[in-house]
Image 1 (cartoon, helix red, strand yellow):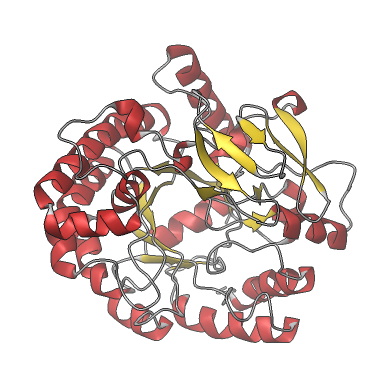
Image 2 (tube, one colour):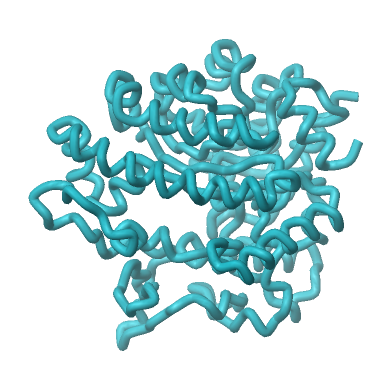
Length: 416
């Protein structure tokens, strides 16, 4: 069974030869470039070849084929179909002094204090990374200072936030005929030249985009005190997203197994909204997009949502959710046994395989292995799980722990 077949088997709620493994198929299942450089050194890879940090906001590196093979990885980010030439990248120095490459298309500014800014095409500062920080934070919210959500929306305003700064493949404009052709050809080639299961991140965020435009506190108040304008904003986002999804599916739907949506809907102690607000405001709009995916392709709907979202899961499943990530099991009501028992026949668990908060960075390799073994025994029982740690591997994670995690995942995930 090859990698793509293995993942598809799980997506059908069937047991493959072994549990599939993911590293870096999307921007919440990857590895920080600082940790990746150390891991490459530990694995004895060619250090003269710099890793490619495709996600500047979270400082994530693409895992190379050698690393994927070493850890039996079955998945790949569709963005890895592009920017193969070194001419598309330039050298960058990370916080620990090690080097990487970043895409040349990024509009980056560094001030006299060594604060790094991400800019849009008009030169507006959308995100900033102070010298001591490991990540880029949003620093501009286009609708934050308005008394209310506006009655009409300019497309350029809806894209004026730091998360609209592209990572591959979205450096390409799929509404330009020439770039759309490159988009299709690149992903088709990735499909024909590899056996990986391809994940394409489409975003299409709803709640999160509201917070990107209004700020977290203001948008959370809007949901309750100004439902009419909130729904109007979300309807405009859905309208735009459906146009994007139609282009994506008609072009590469035959080559992609999963379309990855994003919407962080929960915190540590519960969801950011009541189930009633989710069902009234967000669920119909998620359903409209996800129904479109299911009616027009064989792609699965993959949602990344951090936090405690147990109370929202019935509504998400009714809206058409197929795959959930990252399975933040340390959050309230998100115990693996509980999730597997109640929702294991409805959704695939993509993640939840190692405690990144307490164990992966701070434990011993033996503790990491024990944590993985315990989680896999629950979530992968009978199939239904693609292994990944809970969110990205951060900069401070020891290489020994990363190796221990993936070795144990491969060992614990054997079915046949």
